[in-house]
Image 1: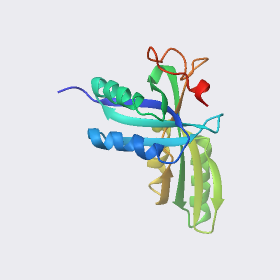
Image 2: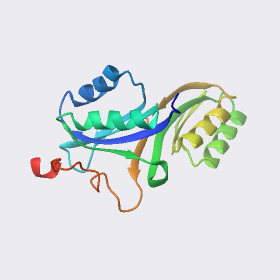
Image 3: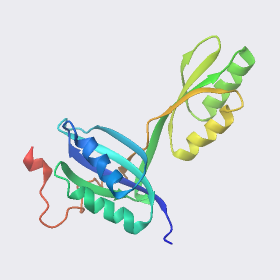
Image 4: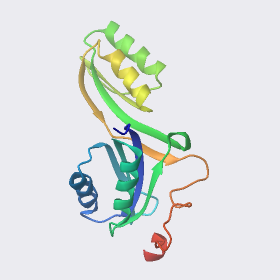
Length: 182
């Protein structure tokens, strides 16, 4: 059996209704589970970037990337290697803090992790943290002792490190340049 690992796909798509549904249906049809999905517009409002994380073997990741490239509204697909990319996630955690001692401890933990306190009530604190999965998991584990009331994660977003972009050296021969189409 092939070893599965986390694969991060960065996909540039046409920013129109139904494109996300078309992309996610491809995963469903092929029997792949999406571990994380984040979508947003790029610097060009006609183009969205989808960051998809899947846990699969290398051959299957290549196959799904090739299938994505065949979809009409997809302009570019690139697998981002962990060494050559920056991956971050936004997480908001609402924590029980019924007394000043608990509030102070939660604030200290937030400060250690460079998280922000974004809401305070008499019985809870809400923390926002941006970071790698390991950082988010570590603060979550520490806050569980206080009682996590709610938590939401955006899903991973990722970009290539340095001057490289999704448009560099990843086009198939004969593949169109999306910039000329829009």
